[in-house]
Amino acid sequence: MSIEHHPTDPMLAAFAAGTLDHGQHIAVATHLVACSQCRAFTRSIEQVGGAVLAGLPPAAMSDNALANVEAQLNKPVRLASMADTAPTVAENEVPGLPNFLRRYRFGSWKRIAPSVHLRPIVLPYASGTRVFLLKSGPGTKMLEHTHTGIEMTCVLSGAFSQDGGHYRPGDFDLGDETVDHQPVVDPGQDCICLVAMQGELRLNGLIGRILQPFIRL
Amino acid sequence: MEGNSDDERWSGMISAVAERKDRAAFAALFEYFAPRIKSFMRRSGASEASAEELAQETMLAVWRKATLFDPQSAGAAGWIFTIARNLRIDYYRREHRGGMIEASDVEVEFQIDESPLPDSRLVSAQNEDRTRSALSKLSEDQMRVVELSFFEEKAHAEIAQILGIPLGTVKSRLRLAMTRLRNLLSELS
Image (cartoon, rainbow over all chains, first blue to last red; front, top):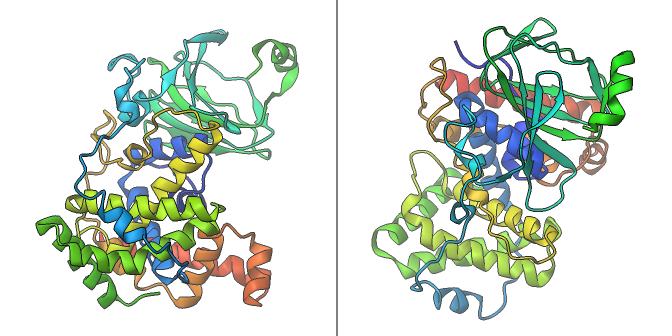
């Protein structure tokens, strides 16, 4: 068996071209960790990028550009990276969390509904997309909802069903204004997903409308 | 699009840098790619000064990372593109932070060949040099719509205008290009 639910091709192409916003970039990267098929596809788009780059009309460099770079070739490299900051998520705390995500700062778990918890991932700067982990207890029937923007979900552990499809670790789901979601978590295990959400979440139905002002997703 | 022989020549140069810190090979790569990387940065909105700096930074990274280049799995231009792309993303993220110095690591988000999720059904790593042959089988027309759509972020209607073709043709050409890449990848696997 392999991953059944993938990002769309245009989404993968935008990822490879480097034009997705930060939050969506993280959601697609999370899927790619699990999916060698989509990884191969993004690699082929990167090669297209190479052909595009090689075919661009040149823009004149400054006169001393090469000399300037050559002067730095033998300097020792100090690679500063997020790796320098201590991870805030323990190795075994969130099963299935890709390593690249451990470098981000995480907020703490908040209960947002019965047996549903949310843990924000803090991006280094404000993005139009919010990223968080969503943990739902076994058998949880999530509130039916629609979105005002695009919502990307990638399963990290556990599983849920939705609209006749079954979503397991690595599976990717895209929701937009036109999609009504009512996912149901499999029995027996928590389901943890990474969610990148643009815009506001709208809960449908009476309970949703009552809860909405309080949970402020 | 450059022919394969160009790319092989560039691959040889990157290997020369990797193996013996060949400065002549580096200068040749610089001469060809730095002005094109600068052009790439300008097109994505960087100022003249920033584009110049990013092009220099990219070439410096080409020198430093040359040993990581694997000609079996990527073309030379494609590999250089990924370095330029990552530096561009990093640049925009830094800009959005209002110049605040906070280390970021774009690279690691693209280095996704880590151990798979703890789910055994995942497909094992595949031979990825097939992506190179897949690319060479896209037609010029298909390459162009992919370029405009994803690398220049033009809307479909705009692409139709630029190429002087109907909107429906833009959409079908893009879809065909994507399908073609997918099919070639699965054929080659």
